[in-house]
Length: 344
Image: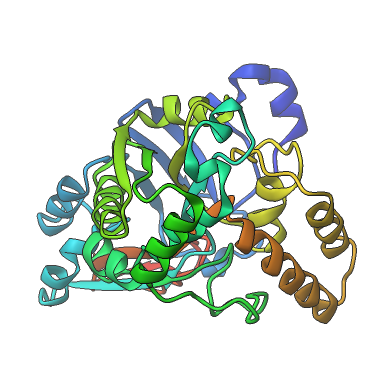
């Protein structure tokens, strides 16, 4: 909770020296270097706060993060690289925690965002989109691109979520059927440009997708684009297909409404269907979980057939930390709760 007085006085500069309520208070922020917090002695639940000082260090490279953990410069790191899990597991000085995220990794397809939707077979014909999905082996993608550190899925929530639509299960790879669909659509060898951010993990995903789709007849061209630029291009509809992850929200509505409802800000696919809008609005106006599940089953039967987004998997949040640290609770939103943490 933000202090109204401090926010009013600081105005646009409030972010440089925030005053809020919580177990810790702000000490300093050095851009691109560190954020420092210290324990607030008058916090209402101070008995659960055992750390006197927290220093956040933004380290982009996963290898550098791990090296700093191993050297003792860090006690805790977020987003451990999946490829580093086996090595950390064998080191008795450290622990690993993991949990499946509430978000997803998917491939957004331009089906109506701009004229480009009708200029490429993938956006123009639902049979081509179905063939594209059938060409993918989700388990294989997870093993190769994520070293097994993800949960395979085909929806906006993972299969272990209570709102997962069981009436539309994860489809198995079927290259023969994919080829038949492409022949039926009259494009046995469609050319698709797949836009992807430049990070190494997403590049691996794109390369595996490229290889798998090729077996069905697709010629996938990878277009590596800086992330902010790629989002801007997606917003303008300047893409055919786009490898894009969503961090997720606790309620499933936060994973689907803004992406599938007509003219919503995150609807990069340009997907718009009156029937889908009606179901979405109904799902967010009822408090009965059973009714909401029924609505999501109806939604899945339509949207997953139209495929504005081909959902691929749900990443595992990975944390590594010294065995001296206890009390860590992995939570699917990926945010670290400092209360309860203790460092011996």
